[in-house]
Amino acid sequence: MPERTGTEPTTARSAYRLRRVLAVAALLGGTAGAIAFALAAGRPDGTATGEWVAAGICGVVALTGLVDLLVLARRPRT
Image (cartoon, rainbow, N blue to C red):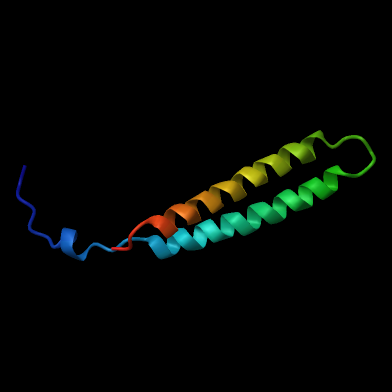
């Protein structure tokens, strides 16, 4: 394997800012979607199974964004 001559280890930059923006977008969008679908599922027509599933999926997306933000808050920035 040839020897590496670049400066990547010392000048590499992390994408923490982009990751934080995407995590906030997932948190806000997932929360809004979960609320919207849960409100739609509360209608009295009795066909709310799909809406509850969609609300659950949106809730998982929001929870994933929240966990990612917590991980980013604990990591040292380099």
